[in-house]
Every structure is written in structure tokens, then in C-alpha cells.
Length: 254
Length: 157
Image (tube, rainbow over all chains, first blue to last red; front, side):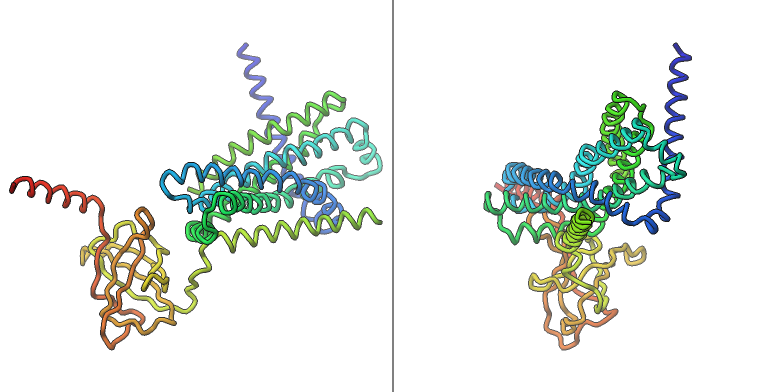
């Protein structure tokens, strides 16, 4: 019994360490790939970022709208419904933008990455590349990792912006809050540091989500079941990692 | 070829949109741009009590922001608070006997410094000190004063 727990623990630490080494290898190969195979990176930015735009914008818009409604119903008790803009901006820029974008990104782009790479492995495409002396890490994994890292902060910014417009539509156009008060109170309360905190968060989440997706795909058991399991694990582990990291970054920032 | 072109176009649009969103967030939602201290002079004022006045709090005259607080420090010799603030160079004709008071915007808003113009012919300049100051109103003191007055009223009846 104790021995089993010990072996599970050792296995966990080994996997964690292997993941760090994998991450370092990705990082080491990143600059040269970014410069020399820029086309590959661009097509992955398209896959991970441009194709995720629709879901990000729709979700951002409705999250912002809900913030507007909730903010109004609570703030109007104190006759402070003008502060809706501040409320929505703080929530979106610092927390909801990066976190929800990371979760949606894991669901939309992370699963695509993991299953694509897993299937490449299951159908021996990665082995075939190695036979042709092409390093699959450099040819397949690094461009996908870079694409995710580049896309995430941009997606989070788009999410926050559409969220603000959603809050504006609900607060100003539907509930009759003054538009000037909405933007002016927001501008008075927020500082550049608040925006940077969100950007740093989304960048960190982008790195984590991309590494996890690529790692899970690359280490998938090369069967139909293994690929499906890797896809599921990508979403689950990314969600856990993102929420824990969010807590840690917020604790540092405050 | 057609497909690469649409991929490149989509990526370009996406990156541009993302950068535009970042630009929007940094410029439209933060208040850093409403007062730039590029050309400003520093003035100090001593207060018995600054309340919860913070760095970057606005300095207003007739309700218009003309400067920002740059530091709030305690003077161990004078046993009072020394507030340093920047005033935009455009407003270089503020009489040196103007009165600085710490006010609160709204009932629960943040605190700022309000300047009331005096009548002197000498103007505030870099390094000068505002002589007449009025401390922040501390709500606890107000309440205790109110309670004390009520007490003495009921005692006299």
C-alpha cells in the first residue's frame, strides 16, 4: 500500500520533471524556428488564434453583458450604477479575460493540438519524419507551441474588449447608465498596472496551455483510446493549472 | 497558393485585431492620459492630517484637475504630513496665498487636493510652499463631535 503510494508519487514527479525538460527543449528550439520557419508559425497562429476568434468574441460579449446586468442589479442598491464600467473593466481585464480565454483556448485550440499531434503519432507520421531525418519537435511541435503563445494574449485582449462593449451595450443602451460616467469612472479607477497584470496573466496562461496541449499530444498512447484520453487530459490539466496559476499571480500582484 | 493567401490574410487580421484591442485597453480604460506631468512644477504643503490621500491623487482648482500628488510623507521634525504635488506649467499664475484643502469626491470617493485661490500678486512657483491648508475631514471626528454636542444639548435641557 505505502509502496504503491510511493511509486505513484515518484511517477508524478518524474512526469513533472520530464515536462519541464520538454518545455526547455521547446524554448531552446523556439528562436531559430521563429526566424527560419516563420511560415509554419503563421499558419499555427491562424489555427490557434484566428479560428478561435468567433468563440472568443461571442463569449466575451455575453460575459460582459452578464457583468453589466449583475453589476447594475447590485450597484443600483447603493445608487452607484455609474460604477458599472469600473466593475466590468476590473473583472474583465484582471480576471475573467485571461482565465476564461485560457479555458476556451484549451477547449478550442488545445484539444485540436493534442488530438492532431496524437493522431500523427498514432499513424506513425512522427516516426516517418524521424526516418527522413526531420526533427518532429522542431517541425511539428515548436510552431504549434509558438502559435499558441502568440495567440493567447491577443485573444484575451479581444475578449476583454468585446466584454467591455457587451457591458456598455447592456449598461448604457439597455439600462440607461450615462455613457460618459461609464467610461470616465473606468478611466479614473484603472491604472496601467491593472492592464499589464491581465496581459502578463494571459501570456503565462498561453505558455502553459500550449505546452500542456503539445506535451499531451506528443506523449499520447498511440491508439484511438490513447488519443481521446490525451485530448481530455489536456482540457482537465490546463484548467487546473490555469486556475492555480491565476491565484498565484494575483497573490503576487496584490 | 490560394489557401496560403487566405491563411496569411486571416492571421494578419487576427493579429491586427488583437493589437488594436490591446491598444484600446491601455488607452481607453486607464486614466494615465488625463494629466501628463511633462512640464510641471513642484509645490509642497503641510497638513495636520492627510486622511487617506494617496500618490497620484488629483490636485483640482474649481473642480478642474491641474496637477497630481507626487508624494505624501511624514515630517518627523514638524510632526505633520508634507504633501508634494506637481502643477502643470500652464497654471503658473496661482496666488501664493491660495488655500489647499483635502476634499473627498462624492460621499465615498477618493480624496484629492482642492485649491482655493487667494488674492496675492505673488504666484506659486517651483519649490514654494502653500501656507494655508485645511486637513482632511475624518468621519470619526465628525461623528464624535456630533454625539458630544447632542450630549451637552440634552444635559442643558
